[in-house]
Length: 402
Ligand SMILES: [Zn+2]
Image (cartoon, rainbow, N blue to C red; front, side, top):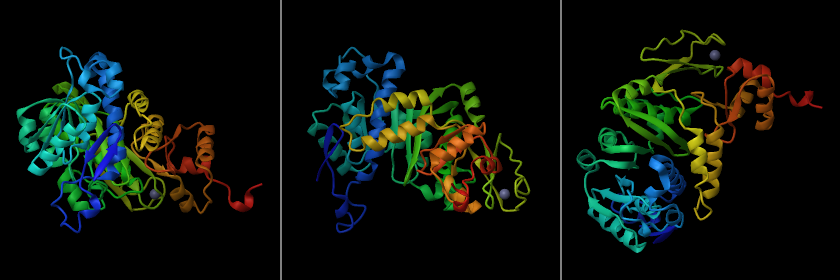
């Protein structure tokens, strides 16, 4: 079937045919990842704008904005981009359309052929190569590497760090191991202790970034997340990389632990490589306190960069509305290492949930910082602890209203 996404049209196997033809045979195409790819295009545009004087790297801003990469001046340096596990090549095609010099790699010759055809179908330059991503990324360096494999990206992580000059984009779709729901698998894949908390999406994202930071540090490379999001069935992060040992040391200082009470939802965090979890919950005294980590406790996004990416979301993107909302929320999100779910708290307190904006205003009126969080419509962040939140913002019981 032909699929149009953003400025490109690609040939892709119909995902509905996968089961009848035998799953695993057809080249994988996931239409649900369109939001992910729309955000990627916006990030790639914003990143090129920001880095090394920007627009010239995309062959002139006018051309890039029209999506016409063919007009690029040969003398101007173009950023190279590797789609490491490219399948249909839709991601590579979309990156090529905004001016990147793309390589689409896959181990499956059918996928390589399809990616080649899809670049040609859109009159886009770039190459499709049959290659094991781990081998290729050890042989060659790219300005931007995009890791979007099926499941965990960790088997590619070390080579990806070696093969990335500037920006490493990583998707993980194995949300159950990431957030601790499949505990043993999470421990194996991410070399950490993940916990299935009530902020599980954020836990997953921070497990992923933490694991990438540690893999990068082994090569004296620092990662800095400039944009990240955890959406229903995946976590995605954009890591700006610096090849310098002292920078890697600094990045590791963002690692640490989160302690979480399963009874009252109290949580606290601790930076460092050694955990000192409380025996009992400091808030309610419960012994059901879990420790997770090491995970990334630092910012997951740079709000200035996220604003720049939001400005690059275009109405011709299929998911432009969700992409815009996501980036807007992300930009305003506080940097605390965990979020709360307002409905979960209200249920806990036996209080009716009120409008989230009212709830957040109550927190702000009490002197705390508070923001929405992109992890869900009822999620928020604050620097208040769970008892302070209750005191400041617990909605009145229905009988007490008016
Ligand atoms: Zn507690």
